[in-house]
Length: 409
Ligand code: MN
Image (tube, helix red, strand yellow):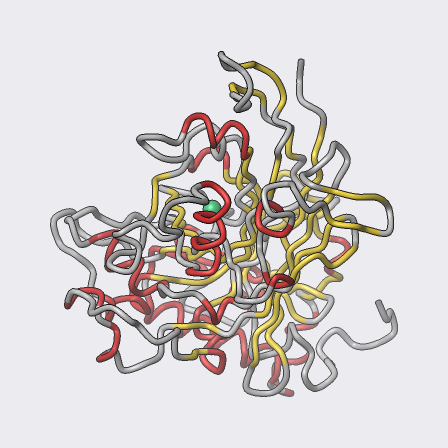
């Protein structure tokens, strides 16, 4: 990091420049018990609450809360107003002297979970991922289940174990039943995996009984974050029939400390893959005014080595379709709901977002500079990063990282 550059002078095209402005929550060494809303700008953050007070913002009260939830609940018109103000404070020469009083180096801020998660849902929206998993687990059957192209498959996960990037992930224990054993065994998972995903953070709530259509996506979804859906494949394989994922997933889900506003990804919107079966009207996005896909380029690194580059643009089901499906039965949205895309995998082998796929069920271990890997070992660290095309250069997504700690015996 350069130390003598002015925090408000960013190189053109900086991935955390004025077109991005992701939100986080952090503490400082002098005030460790008072979380404050921060917005990333280059390698610095703006301490948003006191800045808003100094600038006389009508939203200063919301921005001085110790959590993002009140801002999330305020709705799209407030999100747009705050974003316009932040852009003005950080880029207008007239505001420079005031703004710089509230800037501090990112390295001096301890980031924490930026919002309280209400409900958590995880989908299964990559056709490439679902096809690979189907071939691995059901080699003699159809790769995709009969419902796959008619609805975005999902399950309700565990909100209370969503953790911020950097939180250690303790290897889960549980039941597994190897094919050659007559009875299940108990112990630490031997097939601990990642799932590279994109999470969507719900801001504005909805009323129970009233479905939210695809066109309500921008009114309800505040922003986007990178997410790692840690998965114990051996626990999952034994427990998932007939009700789906449970303890193989619920021990930890990691998210980036940065929430990228949906509006920062406008230039990255792109058409999803062509639909090859007709969709019911509430999911038929051919008539939507804006394309539902997002061109996010993800990188998965294991102990610093890139192991995959999954393209989010390849996802079959879009976040707007997932929102519509999640509420079509009348289920309500709450502020702080988090729903994740499902593992992002592209068509190429190097674009697969899980070790399960990258090593084909563990049969083809990865050769890394520091050893071979089928699944994660204690001490391994996995980091997801991503960027999207912006109006001028890249929009950077905040990374999500986590290290595996040994099981508690
Ligand atoms: Mn998942």
